[in-house]
Amino acid sequence: MAKSPKSLTKQELTFLKQYLNNASPTGHEASGQRLWLDYIKPYIDEHYVDNYGTVVGVINPEAEYKVVIEAHADEISWFVHYISEEGYIYVTRNGGADHQIAPSKRVNIHTPKGIVKAIFGWPAIHTRKDEKEETPTLKNIFLDCGCNSKKEVQALGIHVGCVITYEDEFMELNEKYYVGRALDNRVGGFMIAQVAKMLKDQKKKLPYGLYIVNAVQEEVGLRGAEMIAERIKPHVAIITDVCHDTTTPMIDKQVHGEYKCGEGPVLVYAPAVHNNLLNLIIKTAEKHKIPFQREASSRATGTDTDAFAYSNEGVVSTLISLPLKYMHTTVESIHKEDVNHVIKLIYETLLNIKNNQDFRYLK
Image (cartoon, rainbow, N blue to C red; front, side, top):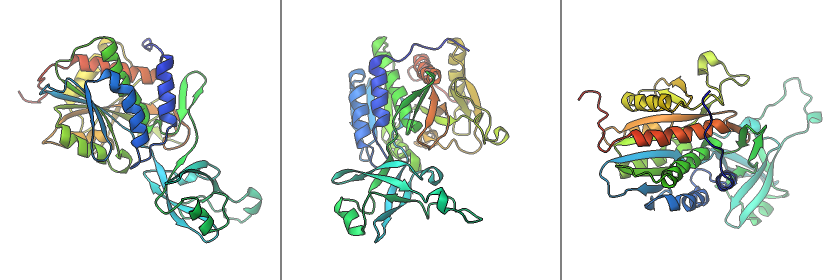
């Protein structure tokens, strides 16, 4: 394995923790976007925010040739769906929240009056004696906020449509892993912000306009990317997101492929991925001895890459994925070295892109 890039500074790690611990559920990303924008402001020339909250930091805004590096800012969550007369709260998904991990979790209900604490209750094991035990489903999981009636719940400011997020916080594991909720994909926002910081720190002058994009609403259909791609009209887009570490128990590598935390970024082959840009990234990785893995994606990547690639009559796009364990849980886990290698790979690739570079298949 190649030597890992330098560790995060105290300032960088502080921002990462703050950014991950902050709640930014789909459709309600504003607080996280403010944190992210405040962090990148020293490293960009200007910025703007679109109608739904996607934030774009721009370097060289006057340049005609435009390159995007992008991540998505939103996290999965729940909506309040129904409040029973007894004061129990039933939920529906906002994005791909996992009903099986919900029981016994502590949550924050985001109301107009502020945060209300609650828990996902579950019957004690002593009471579950039937031959066929009932398992958690979207129909039977429920929240308890300590109220005895619907009226008492509503008095706290809770109403149908309030968003619910888990309260689990960032931690480090065995000095190798970062662990927390919403690493999918706020760690992507962190990584592209670090690329902007590196360009500034190293005093690099790019021959094109660079658009650092932290998009909203990926978890419900790549919607933020769809909107911002039409506004920017880029020539090139490099997307970063997470993918599965398939070496953990209960995952079939024959079905899902083999990718492992600590073995480097995952480069994706897919119809939406432009082969010439992918080849440039591979050559860059090999030149700088950055380890990488390969993934084949059948019809779609399932990431914002698809939204950018098929916009504006076709945008030269690619995907650099970060291996992650336990996606859409409160203990999503990523390897520190992989984070550094993704940052380094994007940074070096940007330095290899020329002004008005022609990526066409046939020239």
